[in-house]
Amino acid sequence: MTSPLHGLAKQRGLLLPAVIWVIVILGGIIATMVTLMGRNSLAMSQEVTGARALSAARAATEWGAWMVRDPQATRAPGPSVLPDCFTSPASLAFPTPMDGLAVQVTCTRSPSTGTLDEGGLLVAVYQIVATASSGAAADAGRVERRVQLRIETCKNPAGTAPLFSC
Image 1 (cartoon, rainbow, N blue to C red):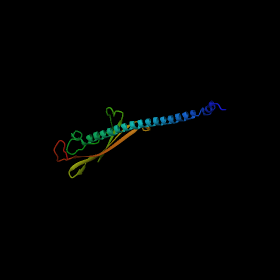
Image 2 (image 1 turned 120 degrees about the vertical axis):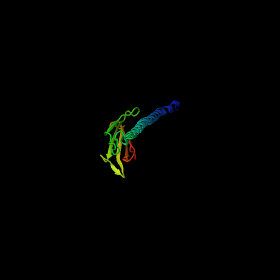
Image 3 (image 1 turned 60 degrees about the vertical axis):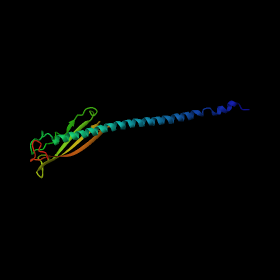
Image 4 (image 1 turned 135 degrees about the vertical axis):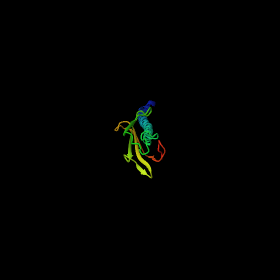
């Protein structure tokens, strides 16, 4: 005759490998989720920094355009003088939340001196390039945005003082 405990003795220990298998699978899933969440956090941070850098670069090109357009005729007074480029490269400082960005603006004028005559109007063309960056060059989290602008400034020597606008 067989004892009722004899059948239980054969089945003992079968549950332990199944529990270990479930724990290993759940641990892998949790580890994968933590890794993905960390990557998403870094990507979101870089996205926000990239948007700030783009805004700073756009603002820097607007500043450069203001400098070469000389709307008050203070940098290049007179009917036949157009403004020179600002000292280039110029480093700009921005308030919070863009204060952690390095912003540089360069200007190239064509012609470098003098003006072009287009039907009696005096013209100069300026290329303004602004670069805003955050982080070191070798850093994986580095963000850099560059905006380029080409603008033409004009004076009409026969126009009315003080702006001689075209």
